[in-house]
Image (cartoon, rainbow, N blue to C red):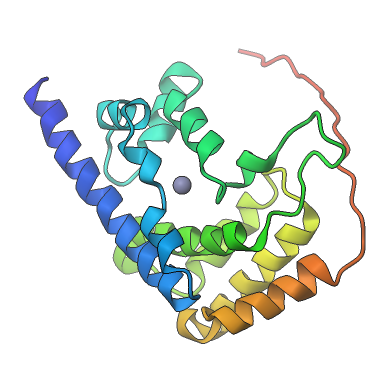
Length: 201
Ligand SMILES: [Zn+2]
């Protein structure tokens, strides 16, 4: 192994550990320490770790770097296939709903993940608006059941207005999930267009 790869391996391990620690703290706030402890463990698998140290950049995700370089990322495909806190884990075009409502514990973990990543990537520039601004764009680029989206958006908007501490607690999360994902009886069907466009060079 080259010295560069060893250095990246150390830096990447520190970054992942910091992220996991932050996720653990938020997961504790909402009463699920075990999920916080197990969060993103697959990042230490060979499939994910080897690619991440090859494309380690520090401020940007190595997965983004690999996707740009190769057109796909095996680490990401491995990660999203095993980690239920990612919206893409739940997407299956051979199911009636395409994207079902994500069960409570995984969306709750997703929120802890999102807020942690937002804090880590923004560093000193992070403020109550950071995640809200990011989510406003992200939510238009993913396939997610509208009910799950409404729950996520509601919590993220509250963080923008009141801050993390006011919003991140078990009782409130459960109430909000009930309101948006259980009591709402609207049914949604995803319309798949499947269009391709030739890219002019
Ligand atoms: Zn993850």
